[in-house]
Amino acid sequence: MFEHQMNPFQNACLTDRCCSQNLYSRQYNTALSQFRATIFKGQLSRLKRRILRHPERLYDLNDLKQYLSVHGSHYSGIQVVPVSSIIGSEGRTLDFDADFHPMSESARERWVNMAIAYLARIALPPIQLIQVGNAYFVRDGHHRISVSQAFGQIAMDAEVITWKATPPFPWQLCCAENPNLLKSPHLST
Image 1 (spheres, one colour):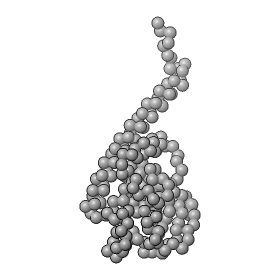
Image 2 (cartoon, rainbow, N blue to C red):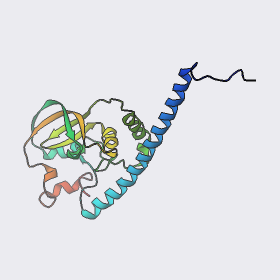
Image 3 (tube, rainbow, N blue to C red):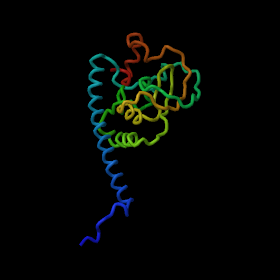
Image 4 (cartoon, rainbow, N blue to C red):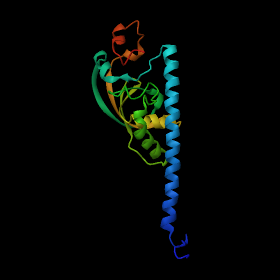
């Protein structure tokens, strides 16, 4: 009758598997809760930005290229970059708002997986950024930035390519001074 009674000292592997499953489920639930909170914070943030007439979306570097006077570029290596200085993206402006909140529920699976990796302290490669002046644009790592910021991280390791460009930059100019910027759907509020 008691033939299959388990002794935890005899089968440590089974106990570890159970603990790891509990840890994973806790991390998954934490990540999912954080995703839902981040979606809600994003809705509030976009409403606030709309009322204050601030840009709601990330600047699109592809749209800005025509307004930049670029004189070359160079590899700047891996640096620690404040998340607050990342203002745009190279083509992924519809997925995240200006504060890197996900724009829709469709980002949930990937966002939650990144959050689980963050909670498990799994080392991920540095994000890839393009620096123009004092501003940065994301080439790769949008979800990592979003997750890190949601968990309160204020700076990230980034592999940086610096574009040599002459100021003033379009994101620094008032829209009244440069009305052509309003024509881009990614730059207008």
